[in-house]
Length: 352
Image (cartoon, rainbow, N blue to C red; front, top):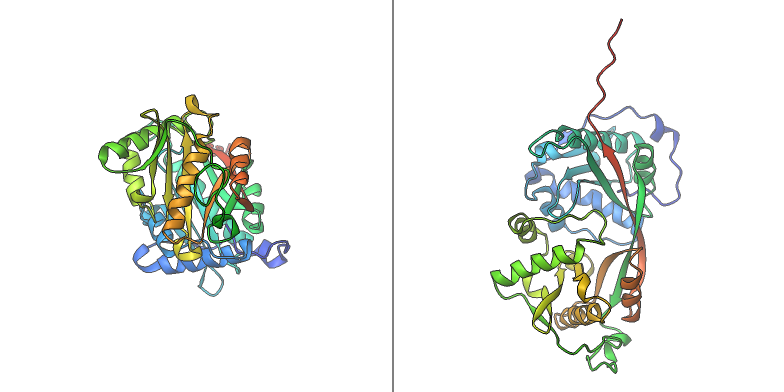
């Protein structure tokens, strides 16, 4: 990601700057530096700050992450940090993910050096415990991140999958109306006989939540894979902004068929609740249950005083996007998940 001004062409200095020498990241020293880079990126690309310090710290210290091995700072000509990158695995996500935070002084050589590092780190994992011979490396960027997107394309990242970030206000006219559905405040939420939403209560609910997540995403979420409860629980509990009391299970006639995971990852930056995941078991879709679950989440967020809610949805998930629009959500930005395959480095050619 980058804080380059949208539409500004890369200047000559950006194209010819010598490759920088990257520095390992120490979260106890560099968290604020990385956060400032991310804030500048957000302002330039989105016109607002979304990233919190807690989120940066959480990502740099996520389960299985060794910042000295998996994260790098990129110094500019004067020695100040102009960019950062970190790479790793996430439970339930197939392949590796690299995240970029490029500040306004970053050049294309800086972005290239950080991506070189990410590919090399991913390549170093090949042939390890799982014996993998190839891996997928992906990067999630907003439409306004020109430098990052250009460099990713030049670095062999392609096959973009589009996502929409959508938001809804919870303190405006929509939130003051009562719909015919009987759900106070949010017209358009259906009434489904036998459906009940309840917050997580104990370890058994957490296990049911994990199972519902795997069931809901098994067939239709790009880049997802089934994971074990132990692996997922480590990630869930370390997720910046996690709050089990804002997460819930959806039951239909006593059977768990859905879940919603709401976090506070944008509370400090935007004053909103963030819907990290929402899913319905494929066997129970088409009955309006997604609206029941989202209506509960919106009501709970409003009860807690949140100004609004934000989520990110796959552009190809037409049914979900239509539901969100009916409940008053609107698109505020466009994002792409771009990927490349990482294979072992070709052996050096032998001289005659």
